[in-house]
Length: 299
Image (cartoon, helix red, strand yellow):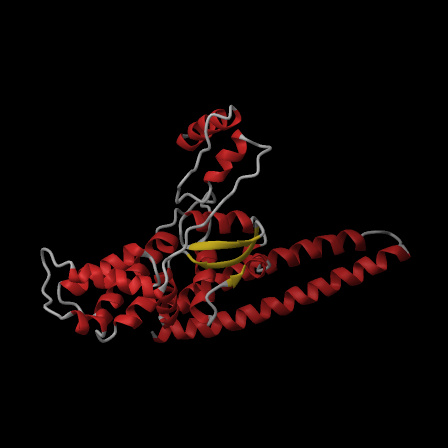
Protein backbone atom coordinates (compact mmCIF):
# COMPACT_ATOMS: atom_id res chain seq x y z
CA UNK A 1 0.00 0.00 0.00
CA UNK A 2 2.74 2.49 0.94
CA UNK A 3 4.61 1.84 -2.32
CA UNK A 4 1.41 2.44 -4.30
CA UNK A 5 0.86 5.82 -2.59
CA UNK A 6 4.50 6.84 -3.02
CA UNK A 7 4.38 5.78 -6.67
CA UNK A 8 1.25 7.88 -7.27
CA UNK A 9 2.93 10.88 -5.67
CA UNK A 10 6.11 10.35 -7.69
CA UNK A 11 4.09 10.05 -10.89
CA UNK A 12 2.32 13.33 -10.14
CA UNK A 13 5.47 15.38 -9.46
CA UNK A 14 7.46 13.92 -12.36
CA UNK A 15 4.74 14.25 -15.00
CA UNK A 16 4.23 17.84 -13.85
CA UNK A 17 7.98 18.49 -14.26
CA UNK A 18 8.21 19.57 -10.64
CA UNK A 19 11.01 17.17 -9.62
CA UNK A 20 12.81 13.95 -10.32
CA UNK A 21 12.29 11.16 -7.80
CA UNK A 22 14.79 8.52 -6.66
CA UNK A 23 13.63 5.46 -4.71
CA UNK A 24 16.04 3.55 -2.47
CA UNK A 25 14.60 0.20 -1.45
CA UNK A 26 15.47 -3.39 -0.57
CA UNK A 27 12.12 -4.61 -1.95
CA UNK A 28 12.72 -6.22 -5.35
CA UNK A 29 9.00 -5.94 -6.20
CA UNK A 30 8.75 -2.19 -5.64
CA UNK A 31 9.04 -1.52 -9.38
CA UNK A 32 5.61 -3.11 -9.88
CA UNK A 33 3.97 -0.20 -8.05
CA UNK A 34 5.92 2.27 -10.19
CA UNK A 35 4.86 0.46 -13.37
CA UNK A 36 1.20 0.69 -12.36
CA UNK A 37 1.52 4.42 -11.67
CA UNK A 38 3.51 5.15 -14.85
CA UNK A 39 2.78 2.28 -17.25
CA UNK A 40 4.41 3.93 -20.29
CA UNK A 41 7.63 5.00 -18.56
CA UNK A 42 10.96 3.20 -18.67
CA UNK A 43 12.65 3.33 -15.26
CA UNK A 44 16.38 3.64 -14.74
CA UNK A 45 17.46 1.10 -12.12
CA UNK A 46 20.78 0.64 -10.37
CA UNK A 47 21.63 -2.31 -8.10
CA UNK A 48 23.97 -1.57 -5.20
CA UNK A 49 26.47 -4.41 -4.77
CA UNK A 50 28.35 -5.69 -1.73
CA UNK A 51 31.74 -4.09 -1.11
CA UNK A 52 35.02 -5.58 -2.36
CA UNK A 53 37.35 -7.71 -0.21
CA UNK A 54 39.76 -4.81 0.31
CA UNK A 55 37.03 -2.44 1.44
CA UNK A 56 35.49 -5.17 3.62
CA UNK A 57 38.81 -5.75 5.40
CA UNK A 58 39.29 -2.03 6.05
CA UNK A 59 35.74 -1.84 7.39
CA UNK A 60 36.34 -4.71 9.85
CA UNK A 61 39.73 -3.39 11.00
CA UNK A 62 38.35 0.10 11.58
CA UNK A 63 35.53 -1.32 13.71
CA UNK A 64 37.99 -3.40 15.75
CA UNK A 65 40.34 -0.46 16.28
CA UNK A 66 37.44 1.78 17.28
CA UNK A 67 37.43 0.11 20.70
CA UNK A 68 34.43 0.82 22.83
CA UNK A 69 32.52 -1.22 25.39
CA UNK A 70 33.35 -4.91 25.45
CA UNK A 71 36.61 -4.59 23.50
CA UNK A 72 38.98 -7.25 24.86
CA UNK A 73 41.73 -6.82 22.26
CA UNK A 74 44.99 -4.91 22.62
CA UNK A 75 46.46 -5.71 19.20
CA UNK A 76 48.75 -3.30 17.40
CA UNK A 77 47.62 -2.04 13.96
CA UNK A 78 50.29 -4.27 12.40
CA UNK A 79 49.11 -7.43 14.19
CA UNK A 80 45.48 -6.68 13.31
CA UNK A 81 46.39 -6.32 9.64
CA UNK A 82 47.91 -9.81 9.65
CA UNK A 83 45.47 -11.48 12.03
CA UNK A 84 45.33 -15.22 11.35
CA UNK A 85 42.20 -16.29 9.52
CA UNK A 86 40.83 -12.77 8.96
CA UNK A 87 41.18 -12.83 5.16
CA UNK A 88 39.49 -16.24 4.94
CA UNK A 89 36.67 -15.04 7.22
CA UNK A 90 36.05 -11.96 5.06
CA UNK A 91 36.17 -14.11 1.92
CA UNK A 92 33.44 -16.36 3.37
CA UNK A 93 31.22 -13.44 4.40
CA UNK A 94 31.67 -11.44 1.20
CA UNK A 95 31.01 -7.73 1.37
CA UNK A 96 27.67 -7.59 3.23
CA UNK A 97 28.16 -4.86 5.84
CA UNK A 98 25.76 -6.29 8.43
CA UNK A 99 27.70 -9.58 8.52
CA UNK A 100 31.05 -7.77 8.56
CA UNK A 101 29.93 -5.60 11.45
CA UNK A 102 28.88 -8.68 13.43
CA UNK A 103 32.26 -10.28 12.66
CA UNK A 104 34.09 -7.20 13.97
CA UNK A 105 32.02 -7.17 17.17
CA UNK A 106 32.77 -10.84 17.85
CA UNK A 107 36.50 -10.38 17.22
CA UNK A 108 36.50 -7.37 19.58
CA UNK A 109 35.03 -9.56 22.33
CA UNK A 110 37.80 -12.15 21.99
CA UNK A 111 36.63 -14.55 19.28
CA UNK A 112 39.01 -15.69 16.57
CA UNK A 113 38.04 -14.82 12.97
CA UNK A 114 37.57 -18.53 12.23
CA UNK A 115 35.34 -19.07 15.26
CA UNK A 116 33.36 -15.91 14.57
CA UNK A 117 32.68 -16.70 10.91
CA UNK A 118 31.70 -20.27 11.77
CA UNK A 119 29.11 -18.97 14.23
CA UNK A 120 27.74 -16.61 11.57
CA UNK A 121 27.53 -19.51 9.08
CA UNK A 122 25.82 -21.71 11.71
CA UNK A 123 23.27 -18.96 12.43
CA UNK A 124 22.64 -18.46 8.70
CA UNK A 125 22.15 -22.22 8.19
CA UNK A 126 19.62 -22.41 11.02
CA UNK A 127 17.80 -19.33 9.70
CA UNK A 128 17.58 -20.77 6.17
CA UNK A 129 16.33 -24.14 7.39
CA UNK A 130 13.70 -22.60 9.64
CA UNK A 131 12.45 -19.86 7.31
CA UNK A 132 12.47 -21.56 3.93
CA UNK A 133 11.87 -25.25 4.70
CA UNK A 134 10.75 -26.31 8.18
CA UNK A 135 8.30 -23.51 9.05
CA UNK A 136 6.45 -23.39 5.72
CA UNK A 137 2.66 -23.48 6.12
CA UNK A 138 1.20 -26.81 4.97
CA UNK A 139 -1.13 -25.18 2.43
CA UNK A 140 -1.26 -24.87 -1.34
CA UNK A 141 -1.02 -21.09 -0.99
CA UNK A 142 2.63 -21.17 0.06
CA UNK A 143 4.69 -19.18 -2.49
CA UNK A 144 7.23 -22.02 -2.70
CA UNK A 145 7.56 -25.59 -1.50
CA UNK A 146 10.24 -27.04 0.77
CA UNK A 147 11.37 -29.22 -2.14
CA UNK A 148 11.88 -26.21 -4.40
CA UNK A 149 13.86 -24.31 -1.75
CA UNK A 150 16.02 -27.36 -0.99
CA UNK A 151 16.67 -27.97 -4.68
CA UNK A 152 18.21 -24.50 -5.01
CA UNK A 153 20.13 -24.87 -1.74
CA UNK A 154 21.59 -28.22 -2.81
CA UNK A 155 22.46 -26.94 -6.30
CA UNK A 156 24.52 -24.15 -4.76
CA UNK A 157 25.97 -26.49 -2.12
CA UNK A 158 27.22 -28.96 -4.72
CA UNK A 159 28.38 -26.38 -7.29
CA UNK A 160 31.78 -24.72 -7.58
CA UNK A 161 30.18 -21.82 -9.42
CA UNK A 162 28.91 -18.76 -7.58
CA UNK A 163 25.79 -18.59 -9.76
CA UNK A 164 23.18 -20.89 -11.29
CA UNK A 165 21.69 -20.40 -14.74
CA UNK A 166 18.20 -18.95 -14.43
CA UNK A 167 16.66 -20.82 -17.36
CA UNK A 168 18.22 -24.14 -16.33
CA UNK A 169 16.41 -23.91 -12.98
CA UNK A 170 13.07 -23.18 -14.65
CA UNK A 171 13.45 -26.27 -16.87
CA UNK A 172 13.56 -28.61 -13.85
CA UNK A 173 10.26 -30.51 -13.28
CA UNK A 174 9.89 -28.96 -9.80
CA UNK A 175 9.65 -25.50 -11.41
CA UNK A 176 7.61 -26.51 -14.46
CA UNK A 177 4.42 -24.99 -13.07
CA UNK A 178 4.73 -21.36 -11.93
CA UNK A 179 8.51 -21.55 -11.69
CA UNK A 180 9.14 -17.85 -12.31
CA UNK A 181 6.71 -16.86 -9.55
CA UNK A 182 8.51 -19.23 -7.16
CA UNK A 183 11.92 -17.78 -8.02
CA UNK A 184 10.57 -14.24 -7.56
CA UNK A 185 9.08 -15.19 -4.18
CA UNK A 186 12.39 -16.68 -3.01
CA UNK A 187 14.18 -13.56 -4.21
CA UNK A 188 11.70 -11.37 -2.34
CA UNK A 189 12.36 -13.46 0.79
CA UNK A 190 16.12 -12.97 0.17
CA UNK A 191 17.13 -16.62 -0.12
CA UNK A 192 18.43 -15.87 -3.61
CA UNK A 193 19.10 -12.90 -5.85
CA UNK A 194 18.36 -12.84 -9.59
CA UNK A 195 20.94 -11.17 -11.84
CA UNK A 196 19.80 -9.64 -15.13
CA UNK A 197 21.44 -8.79 -18.44
CA UNK A 198 19.72 -6.04 -20.46
CA UNK A 199 16.67 -6.41 -18.21
CA UNK A 200 16.32 -10.17 -18.76
CA UNK A 201 16.91 -12.67 -15.91
CA UNK A 202 20.20 -14.44 -16.55
CA UNK A 203 21.53 -16.09 -13.39
CA UNK A 204 20.77 -16.74 -9.73
CA UNK A 205 23.11 -16.17 -6.80
CA UNK A 206 22.68 -16.55 -3.01
CA UNK A 207 20.71 -13.78 -1.34
CA UNK A 208 23.64 -13.02 0.97
CA UNK A 209 27.31 -13.90 0.37
CA UNK A 210 27.42 -15.91 3.61
CA UNK A 211 24.54 -18.06 2.33
CA UNK A 212 26.94 -19.75 -0.08
CA UNK A 213 28.89 -21.24 2.85
CA UNK A 214 25.61 -21.95 4.66
CA UNK A 215 24.21 -23.79 1.62
CA UNK A 216 27.33 -25.96 1.49
CA UNK A 217 27.11 -26.69 5.22
CA UNK A 218 23.48 -27.75 4.92
CA UNK A 219 24.18 -29.89 1.86
CA UNK A 220 27.15 -31.58 3.58
CA UNK A 221 24.81 -32.78 6.35
CA UNK A 222 24.27 -36.34 5.10
CA UNK A 223 21.06 -37.05 7.02
CA UNK A 224 19.50 -33.70 6.13
CA UNK A 225 20.48 -34.05 2.47
CA UNK A 226 19.09 -37.58 2.24
CA UNK A 227 15.81 -36.56 3.88
CA UNK A 228 15.05 -33.68 1.54
CA UNK A 229 16.36 -35.44 -1.56
CA UNK A 230 13.86 -38.21 -0.73
CA UNK A 231 11.12 -35.58 -0.57
CA UNK A 232 12.19 -34.20 -3.94
CA UNK A 233 12.15 -37.73 -5.40
CA UNK A 234 8.68 -38.30 -3.94
CA UNK A 235 7.48 -35.15 -5.72
CA UNK A 236 9.14 -36.24 -8.99
CA UNK A 237 7.59 -39.71 -8.69
CA UNK A 238 4.16 -38.11 -8.21
CA UNK A 239 4.73 -35.94 -11.31
CA UNK A 240 5.70 -38.96 -13.44
CA UNK A 241 2.75 -41.00 -12.14
CA UNK A 242 0.43 -38.17 -13.13
CA UNK A 243 2.06 -37.97 -16.56
CA UNK A 244 1.59 -41.73 -17.03
CA UNK A 245 -2.08 -41.51 -16.03
CA UNK A 246 -2.69 -38.69 -18.53
CA UNK A 247 -0.92 -40.61 -21.31
CA UNK A 248 -2.84 -43.81 -20.54
CA UNK A 249 -6.14 -41.92 -20.63
CA UNK A 250 -5.43 -40.54 -24.09
CA UNK A 251 -4.24 -43.93 -25.35
CA UNK A 252 -7.45 -45.45 -24.00
CA UNK A 253 -9.52 -42.87 -25.90
CA UNK A 254 -7.60 -43.49 -29.11
CA UNK A 255 -7.90 -47.25 -28.63
CA UNK A 256 -11.67 -47.00 -28.28
CA UNK A 257 -12.14 -46.02 -31.94
CA UNK A 258 -13.90 -48.86 -33.82
CA UNK A 259 -11.46 -48.45 -36.67
CA UNK A 260 -8.02 -46.88 -36.27
CA UNK A 261 -7.50 -44.06 -38.80
CA UNK A 262 -3.99 -43.96 -40.27
CA UNK A 263 -3.56 -40.36 -39.08
CA UNK A 264 -3.75 -41.54 -35.43
CA UNK A 265 -0.68 -43.80 -35.67
CA UNK A 266 1.96 -41.02 -35.28
CA UNK A 267 0.14 -39.73 -32.21
CA UNK A 268 -0.03 -43.22 -30.70
CA UNK A 269 3.71 -43.75 -31.29
CA UNK A 270 4.46 -40.38 -29.67
CA UNK A 271 2.30 -41.20 -26.64
CA UNK A 272 3.94 -44.61 -26.25
CA UNK A 273 7.39 -42.99 -26.42
CA UNK A 274 6.44 -40.48 -23.72
CA UNK A 275 4.94 -43.27 -21.63
CA UNK A 276 8.15 -45.30 -21.91
CA UNK A 277 10.26 -42.27 -20.93
CA UNK A 278 8.11 -41.56 -17.88
CA UNK A 279 8.33 -45.19 -16.79
CA UNK A 280 12.14 -45.12 -17.09
CA UNK A 281 12.26 -41.94 -14.98
CA UNK A 282 9.89 -43.47 -12.44
CA UNK A 283 12.06 -46.54 -11.96
CA UNK A 284 15.20 -44.39 -11.70
CA UNK A 285 13.65 -42.17 -9.02
CA UNK A 286 12.44 -45.17 -7.01
CA UNK A 287 15.92 -46.75 -7.07
CA UNK A 288 17.46 -43.52 -5.80
CA UNK A 289 14.81 -43.18 -3.10
CA UNK A 290 15.50 -46.73 -1.95
CA UNK A 291 19.21 -45.96 -1.54
CA UNK A 292 18.49 -42.75 0.35
CA UNK A 293 16.14 -44.60 2.67
CA UNK A 294 18.98 -46.95 3.62
CA UNK A 295 21.20 -43.95 4.36
CA UNK A 296 18.56 -42.46 6.67
CA UNK A 297 18.13 -45.79 8.47
CA UNK A 298 21.85 -45.76 9.31
CA UNK A 299 22.14 -42.10 10.33
